[in-house]
Amino acid sequence: MTTTRTELHRLIEQLPDEELDALREWLEARQLEAFGRRQGFSLELVTRDPVLRALAMAPFDDEEETDEERAEVAAAKEELARGEGISWDDYQERRRTAR
Image 1 (tube, rainbow, N blue to C red):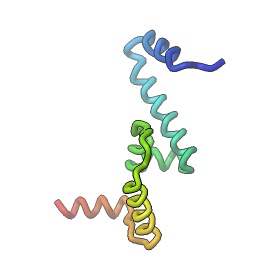
Image 2 (image 1 turned 180 degrees about the vertical axis):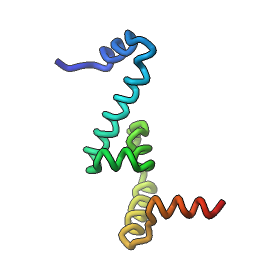
Image 3 (image 1 turned 180 degrees about the horizontal axis):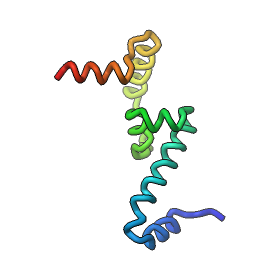
Image 4 (image 1 turned 45 degrees about the vertical axis):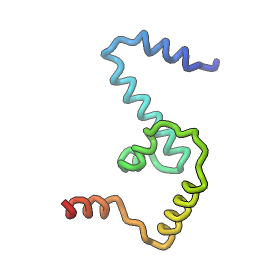
């Protein structure tokens, strides 16, 4: 049986309001798991890393990537390959000390 979005919307509409938070949490967990599988990250890492979590929860972008965006991504990857990136912890420390 193939479930349609219409069927899922109908089921959600029938849920009591007090069940909605639990359903949202369950759906978010499935979204994090699916993102981790697609990108090759563990669920623990996706859950713990705020950037990965934000990416996993972001709406799907179906717009074509522009030449400028492709160039920016390539430049960023080259910077990382040269070791010019910083860890999340270093970034947070820099933000704390900049205040």
